[in-house]
Figure 1 (spheres, helix red, strand yellow):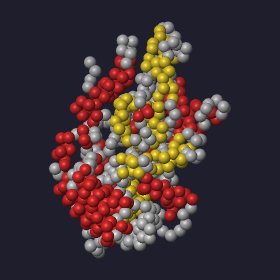
Figure 2 (cartoon, one colour):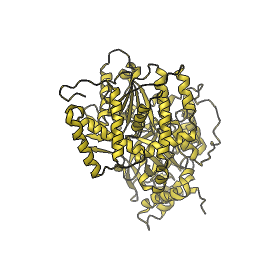
Figure 3 (tube, rainbow, N blue to C red):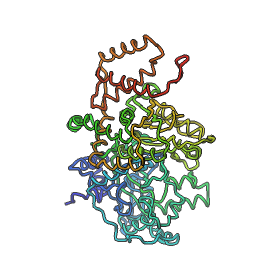
Figure 4 (cartoon, rainbow, N blue to C red):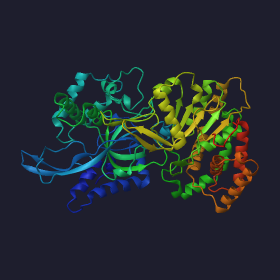
Length: 631
């Protein structure tokens, strides 16, 4: 009788068992997926599945069920594989039909390629990376809910020296001879040892560890500099058209780190160097598409759950489908909002108006698109920031502690002229080379314009500034495919900090007016941040995610009242209220309502929005309009 966790430790046993019934059950493949879906629903069973995000690769058992919280960074061409194949044993003259799905290497003897039972199938490969800019509190919270207790394999010796090239070659000899023999016969100790030698890519490297020879030649293609964690080749068997580039997913699949994969890749690379006409792939393409399994493991997808958000404090399902949870949270939103407003007011040196607008910015979200216009975005330009470089660093740290994913881009001349922001297609390696702006939805992008100094922007700098402007105005990034550009929609919250008005466009500019002048700014901001206990921060995190996800409507009655108000405001001075001003006022009113947990606009909410806007505009030096078309 199989134990409770056999389906986690040995998922291929479940697959093979259902495949054995394929004659009597033609839809066995659907039953495999349904089996694991049902298992994962029971009693928080998903918390027992090890995560590639939390557990070092060398601790994980090959061919076990694992999960991976990730973003789809690239989609490779479909590949063919033997879904069903027949093996023969020369000694006993026996033949056996085997399942090749969810596997990389054939097993169980000599494969009969001429067998009538052979079935060629197709699968898609996604190159997936950890969610870019994911906050440390998110990672710790996900890891804290896991009930997995893993131990290293018996071959693992802590702090041992990395193997030399020759030792790697010796270790690879055996898998080369056994690549078509049973996977089960290959010892997990051997594969674990192979993985451990390059494990610095999945863990923060120690200061005294020397980099592996593989890491120097293999670029894991993370969108943001300094990111850590495993990249993964996810093999998708069904409905791959339902996934898009930059989707956030939690993938459940069978882990494949067979050393034979690296040997096969080395053989293919060597043969293509000797005879370039032998294969269709270039050497560069082979390195990207068949990297060492110890650095880029393969994950054969059984099931993937699209992530609407990556806040571990909320249910993963859409909030509207979780009425009980929503009603319990809504009752506390107003009080939490007041506490968050006080906290942000202290961070913004006593400016409560700027704190109000910062809350509205943090819960903004592109909820729809009308033609090319993204509705709901609210890019905030916080001007008048102190010249001290540490201030914007502290402000970003505060935001980083509140949102699930974020990135601070210092707009120094060097970064603007040298950083690759827009992803581009590399046709030689046949891959999408990532850029800073390849981010998952709901990421907070913090643009620090206070770091910009005088100088000349070169071609790259101008292109980067244009890309940032398009992202802010249209919530899209035009990926560079050399011969053409391809537009990818996004949903990224952009906050710009600057001394004067930003050189980038924004939906709203708030000029900071500090009422506090602490003698030591750095000590003051650190003390404000430390005063927030983790339980209080968790309240803020839940509040922001819930307010962001709420639905919103305007009744016909309020719509009519807003129209009449608009006409009234334009009576005395038609240039005092343009259509663009009305649009911004409606966005502010929407966000103000949602920030109080109200999913519809009231007359009182409309009046409050008008008051906020009047206060904000009174701070901002207004340019004299000549024809009403100036920004």
